[in-house]
Each structure stands twice: as C-alpha cells, then as structure tokens.
Image (cartoon, rainbow, N blue to C red; front, side, top):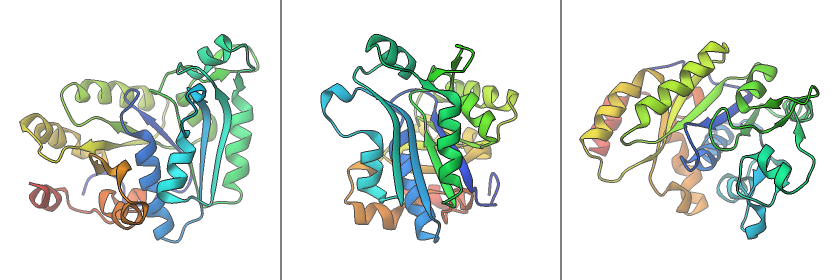
Amino acid sequence: MSGTTTPWRGPVVVTGTDTEVGKTVVTAAITAAAQAAGLRVAVLKPGQTGTATGEPGDVDAVQRLAAPLTGRTLASYPDPLAPLTAARVAELEPLELYTAVDAVREEADKHDLVLVEGAGGLLVPMGLRPSGEPWTVADLAVSLGAPAVVVARAGLGTLNHTALTLEALDRRAVPAGVVIGAWPAAPELVHWTNLSDLVPKLLGALPAGAGAMDPGVFRRSAPGWLTPALHGVLDDWRAWAEEIG
C-alpha cells in the first residue's frame, strides 16, 4: 500500500489543488473515520468567506455529515473571495497568523485530531502576520509542524496542479498525502491513468456525491474511502479499483 500507515494525529491541515475540489467533504470523511476509530476530533476553519448568501458554512457541513466533537470558525467574511481579500473588501479585521496557531493548539490539547480546513488552494492569502505580511495555509502548516492532506480532482489537469501543490509543501518540509475529492461513478481512461500516477501519494478517494449522502450512511462508509494514515481501512488500491471497476 502506498504512503504511511501510521495514523496521523494532532493538527492536520486540509488544503486543495484549487477551490471546489471537495475539501469540506474530505474533512468530514476523515472526521467520521477517526471518530469511528475512537478518536476525539475537532474541526477548525480559519477563514470562512461568502457568508452573505446565508448558506451554511463549511464547519456546518462537516457537523451535519460527521458531527465532530468540536467545530469552530475563527473568522467569517461576507464576500466569496480569498479570506484576506474578503476582509479588506468588507473593511473587517484580517485573521492574524498566531491567533489561528493558538486556536489550533488549544484544541490539540483537548482532542486527538484537529483538522484545519483551508480556503481555496495552498497559497491563498488567509490573513496577516504581525509584520503585516500575508500568510497562507502553507505557513500555518509550517507554524504548527502539521502534515497536510491535499484534496485533488480526479480528471484532466489534476496531475500538474497536484504536483505543484506537493512540491510547494515539500520545499517547506511539510509531509503530505493526496485524497481524490470526487471519484466518478463511471470513470474514464483519464481517471484511471491519473489514479495510477497518484497512488504513491494517495491516502484516499471519495465517491462523487458523497456530500449528499444520508449522514448515517456517510459515517459508516467513510473508513472504506481512506487509508490507515487517515484512520480508514482502505489498504489495497488494486482490490479497490477492481471493485469499483
């Protein structure tokens, strides 16, 4: 099996190759798998944007699907923009890096696993440092000494975006693995070849539409989508591919 089999604990950052790749549903799946394994799980969202629509935020979605022990959003902004940009447009205080670091560490003292879901991709500006410089999810992972789950698409273009994200993490000495956010019900050749290329770093794959499942079904199913590193039971990609195919 690819990747580490030692389960990840403590702070873990969940980022993506882009926006709308399935970070929130993957966060919920990891939460459900970890709780099924008996862990106490907290989920933190440093910056939630687009709140003016009145729709539930990402932590609300994770709560609905997986019911983590704790769910927190540290800063919310009305416009659907990068968090630092959204703060500036709304004339609101941007989130300071060490406020986020302290909040994660506070939860890590009380939980076995703290999942920190970013916004958009790895290098999206999240807020400001005390120096006034922007910080990103990559900076947060470095400050926490946390590994990163990179959520990626299954289809065309994902190899380049995933490689760029993993390279940026590797240059910062952040351990990382990949989860496919939405594996199609009828995969095509491009999906299978991408899967083969991603397997060395692959820690899981969620079926398309997982976020619309009944929460009970979601929680029972989640361990089968993830490898032991993320508290799941998926340990043979060849067998998985034969079953899906």
